[in-house]
Image (tube, rainbow, N blue to C red; front, top):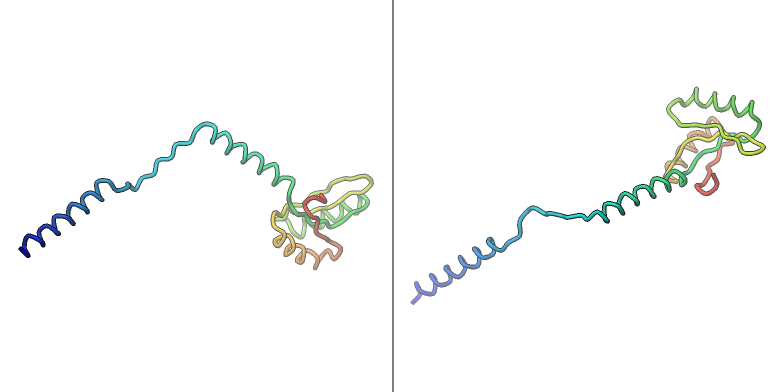
Length: 129
């Protein structure tokens, strides 16, 4: 009798484990993406690129006449050649701006570093550019 119960339990366990491997899940995951999803993803990437171009912090070194702005820009490029800097014109002044920083903390750290050389430098927020 004991042998019959033990063999029945063993057979039952063997049957359960075989069924779990037969009906178990596979390691591979197949994802089918429709054309609409692809189109939406490409549209989102395009929108994010446009937002990034317009949504960044910059450091302004100078605001004033052309000759002094040109001199400050040249001096800055000489001291910090690896940094992006530009000269822009907004009536009636020329502006020397540095960097395109996405994050406020990074921009603020760079501002602290630049203020050692250019004490009048300040940080421009994204909507103030």
